[in-house]
Image (cartoon, rainbow, N blue to C red; front, side, top):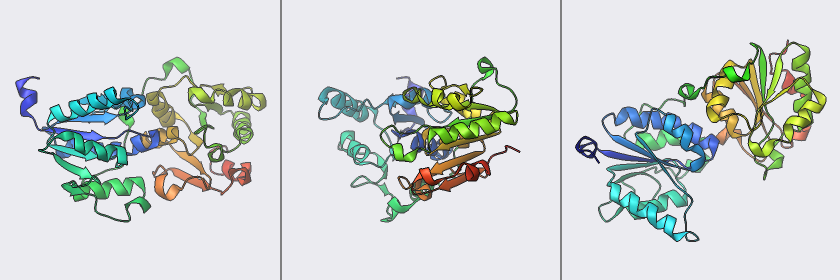
Length: 312
C-alpha cells in the first residue's frame, strides 16, 4: 500500500444485490463519494455486479463477497481477515441484512463507525418502520442519520456502452419479458409481450427483446408471433441495457433488474407488477415511469399496457 493511499481515510460500502437493489444504491454511493471526497472508498459486492461496479465513478476498489459461509469456512475466514486488516474508518452497510450486519464482528476490537442496523452501530438507522419504506427513501434516511444529506436518485448514465454492434434503427421498443425463474407469478405472459411487439412492428417500430441467459426461451416465443422482433436475450451487458434504455422510444418489462438499469439510465418505462411484489417498496422511480399492477398479471389486458406506450 502506498504512503498516499494509507494516509487517506478508508471507507467501506456494502451492497451485495439483487440487481434492482444494487442499482438503487448508486444514488447513495454517489452521495458517499461526495461526502468523503478525500477518502479511499471500497465496495464489497457480489461477483455478478463486479464489472458494473468497477466502472462506477464512486469507488477506488471493488472487493467480492464470494458467498462464503459456514459451508465454505475458508472463504468466510479470508473475507474476515481482509476486512479486519483494512482498518476502515467507517462502514456504510447499504445491504442491511443479517449477513452484512454480521460482518461488523470481523472488524476487530477497535471497530469502525458503522451506518446500518448492526448491533452497536455508531450511526444506526433507528427507524422501526424502515422495512415499510421504499428502498430509496430508506437509504436516504439511513444516510441522513449518518450525517449525509445530499442523496440524489441513481444516475447510471456513466454505464452506457456503445451500441453500434447491434445496428439498431432510430425507432425501437425495448421489451424485458423475463424475471426470476423462481417467481413465475411476477411475469406477464410472454404471448402478450409478443402482441405488443407485433403492434410495434406494424407501426414501423422495431421490437427488441432483452433478458438474461436463463431466459433464452422467451425470445423464440415472442418471435413466433412477431418474426420481426430482434432477440438480444443473453447478448447484452448491464451497460448495454442502460444504453438501450436511453435510446429506446420506451421500455416495457416486468418487475426485474433490467428495468431498474433502464430507468436509472434515463429511459422511459412501463413496469408491470403482480401481488408477488410491492411497487411502493421497490419500484424504479423517475419522471417517465408508469407502474401497472394486478394481483394476477394474467388479468392485465394488452390494451391497457399498449395505452402507456408510444405506438401511435
